[in-house]
Image 1 (cartoon, rainbow, N blue to C red):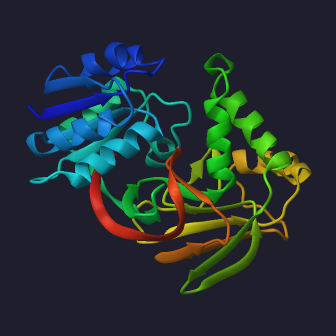
Image 2: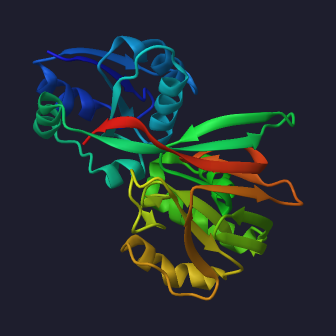
Length: 297
């Protein structure tokens, strides 16, 4: 019998699926379920409970998982195996990992203790007071349109649904967001110019199935770089279908590369997001920490 703690996003509109489809399938184990009540709560719960459980599961979306990852890595003592129960609007990391809302399958993976190592991204960035902070991400971090899109999504009514809100917010951002003057430097990659977005990916997709790194592997010790320069809004409309289909884009303003570490700076105030959460500002150094966590998979 495994000791399992599940941190559920209390604001999730689909959290009943955890109680109906996942929890009953875990009846052979000792399961403690904790629901979050506010932003940052999943981080605090993970930090508190990580040392005392064998498995720590995040039931929510990429944002909930990001908090659980950061809380786990901040905790003292032994580190549990993590898991994802996809209840979010995007579930991009869960899709790369292969996690689904399938109770019997999840129970089988736990019974067999089927796990895999997963790399973690590490960001050193500037907060609103100018202090340098460090944060981990598990899926994607980005600068440029990413943070701008998040602000727009936050103002959209939830009843429209994730797909429509993401699409409309991205389209609005393309029409109104001025390309960001950006400097990026890595061992085998350099960029100096205006960029719509620069994303660093551990997983394959972000923004609700926009596949920016179709070849990404979760344990290869590198981050995939996805750069869009001064592309137009028409380019976005024309090419979004290819991103959704998981294809690499062929466009003069799109570049793909990979790195272990990269430094990002801008002469303007530029925001940074990680796993769909706005965190702070450039300048930033982003690196990969190899095999820092184990996940049920």
